[in-house]
Image (cartoon, one colour):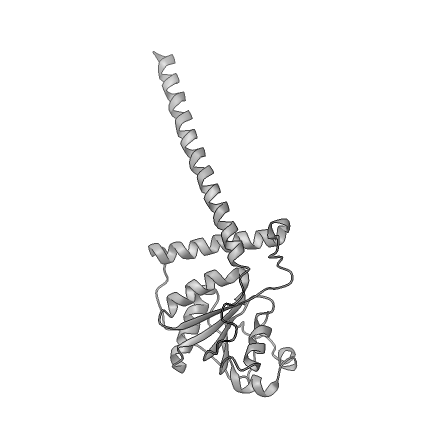
Length: 229
């Protein structure tokens, strides 16, 4: 009798193990397929490179973003450039030297409140509303673009958004799986994208919408800070 009970328990444990392993295998397969799609999508260039928008928005945090934003501004593709997520106390002189001081003074503004991508979107939305703008070009890293566009669309559902990815040299998007650093970066960003998608779809952990006080300063000699890469 005792032996029969042990046998039933063993068989039940084996069935549970098979179900768990099967579920893990399916999850791994789906995650791997999604990662491959995400990596390929992260390589796409802007589909509207010449479209003029009212603003260019650059979230801080990645190499080459601000330089590309300034280049687009110099080419006349927007009236003003807004940098969201600027850290307090960052010196501005080095960056000023690399760009046209007149353009810098008249047409670049800073936002200091955002600390992540969701907050970047909300800060940019508050700034866009304050300027009565309805279109923007979002300049961020290619691997960050899908998540950033999702957050910005959520924050500004009625605005026209143009994706303008940049591709830092140290991120090897071609054959990305061969480079440990790039593979880890893309896998991490894909996981963040899935979590952001779950939040938006299921309402998990959505932050209370609070009024952001967007401290945007015109780029002048009196401004104490600049964004850093």
